[in-house]
Image 1 (tube, helix red, strand yellow):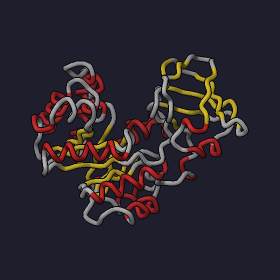
Image 2 (image 1 turned 180 degrees about the horizontal axis):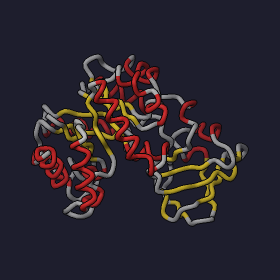
Image 3 (image 1 turned 180 degrees about the vertical axis):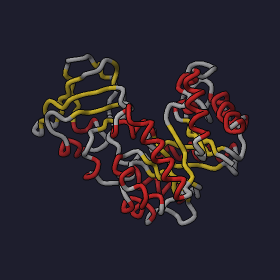
Length: 314
């Protein structure tokens, strides 16, 4: 049976009970990137109160650089600079890995910045914005080429693994895996009965795909984060390549990112979304992950039911 990973959050679980849409085809994803350890524990306890037999995925935030301690959104204007201090990212040593002229892609590649200056004395990084909008707290910031040198697990990842072990969760998602060494370092900390979902969202993971596929239970292609590494225009070919290699290895594959983006606010999907969903399913994937669509969207039940119906039809 194909699976649907449904992300819980302010919408699904808090506003919309999971019992109304529950079936054994669902895995409930707790996004470790959002909230404190105690807050995430409350989410797990609430899922268990509603369904003791629910399958739960702890999705680790991984070594993704994110904005932090931003109390008020930063207004971005094309051609204008803005500043972040060293404590306004989740990795205090971020400044050591960047230099003047580096390009930064933020918020799933919707914003682009350029590093203008790193001031170690005043602990401030100055960026030049090439985009318009609002930079919010806890949004990803990606600089190509630096992740190979950054530690695989941050402190929060380790604490979330401890929580997952303690609460006997069935799945753990490993974010920003680069190679077999990363998987092994995580497995040393994870309970033996936990199934690993290795997320393919770095170029290094694609380059080391064969060794990764030989050492994981599932993979998940996160098209959003992968696009920041390889470019949006290359995502279709990368997706097809990864799926074809996974089939050879017999590893079940999930796909994620913006399948039903339109349904965050509207009760129906767009036609391109339906076509993409159909084409994706017919390529032989094992499951679909819904993220914002169910975590914060207005129509989580409809999203889940639509994917469920599409899986049955194809």
